[in-house]
Length: 86
Length: 458
Image 1 (cartoon, rainbow over the protein chains, first blue to last red):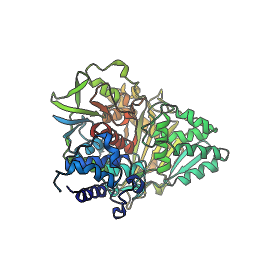
Image 2 (spheres, rainbow over the protein chains, first blue to last red):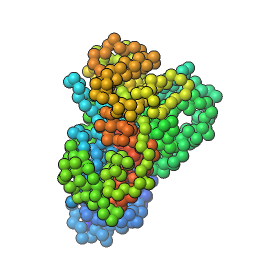
Image 3 (cartoon, rainbow over the protein chains, first blue to last red):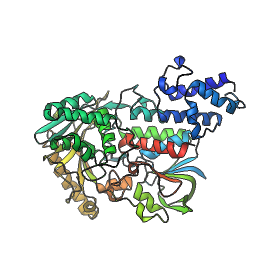
């Protein structure tokens, strides 16, 4: 997947986890927790959804890398370059 | 080989099952009973539906509120707010000699009631609220310190302290008189700060939604499948043996059967892990009326009553304790349409051993006698509804034992809790009542948090 496709995948996951949020105004460099009403259980679901949808295993010590859209794409890009788009 | 086998299809087991099945685990819930629900179940008698556990769902929040426990569990289980069809309470009371405190789902009502009836406590009560607001709401950092001690640092009037403790103990107290402060703060939030609600169709609606989600996500449910034994090898739970001899192999096991009850299933459980059993159980009289209770002036959702200044939350010596109780009318929630019949449920503390010792004829007789005594006790605090009664039933500590499997019919499980959910075995964990969260919402959150922490992460 390309960075743009990864971005789409992240937004799709967020829209499932936080259906009431307006994601069109999401700032890519601002941490999710500062702009979305999400708690640690929701963050776990981002990790779990990536595993469920794309078979990406993310070890617990890497969870902090998934702080914002930009940092998540940077983290996932090398890991998802061979993953086909869904 | 299952990824996870869950023991018990109550609220916590079902919630954990939904999480694990949704994230593609091969998961099976085994339930000894012929129906799901555990403590919060239902039965049919004389052509009518009766609930066992549920008086009300706590932690009520209106649609769109994401932050509290209710919003959190809806998201985690992929449920919509509408799925639970919660109708908020009309309003409830705590009635002690010389003082009545009203509360509903707007906390300001309770706050102003306390200010009005206990003006000398006003500032101290506010400082106490500020302390509660800071406390972790999931009970994960639950401190094992006496709630009585903590509250005693803030409030001086013993009557106010008893009146605050009364609903919290009745709706979640697993040991006599006191509880851990962590549990106290969770219960205080769930009942006073957030409040009570109920679906028109009662507990079966919530159970139906949960079990449907679980099955839809690919989970497997086996009813009439009690666990006889958990086979242990090298510090691991290797497999389960069911009552009928069936063996189930599982990578991990999550038990909602209760701490002692789970330990007993394990080969070679170390004796020091046996927490003391709970002693607190209830008897409940259920009256079906030919009219809506509010037409008789019985318009409160729940009335917690106590006939003396001190509240004795303890196992009584007699079959039941008539000094205190909880009167709940499921009719008195703000539904769109009324319930078909009037119902009044009255819960009182009861002694399991006394009920368990009765032979079948005496048991039937005592149920009738104590129905009359409990109702007579309750109508000291609410309008006398006895002329409108068309059907009755009584459930006892024995009923609670049958539905929960808990030693002593202990309604809220063991006296001490195992907050971190771990056991002496690497791949066996517990959730539900003995993990320390009670009530419908608490149990569901217990299943979710333990599933997340030990079964999904990493």
